[in-house]
Image (cartoon, rainbow, N blue to C red; front, side, top):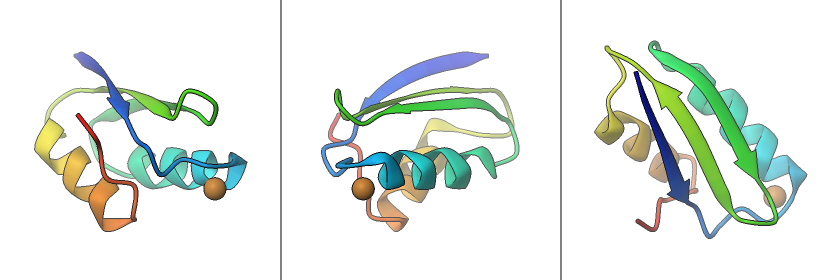
Length: 68
Ligand SMILES: [Cu+2]
């Protein structure tokens, strides 16, 4: 199990938080997604078969690219 906090500059409101949490949660292997609109971060806990590359690719696809 891995937990990573990503910096996501495009987070601007509660809708962004909701979109990120619901979309990323759909990935098989993702255990939890907690996004913070003030800090513009998302803390994601995942295990196989989910991978960091897959999560980053999904975030980029839904217009919330990771900055780190
Ligand atoms: Cu928003």
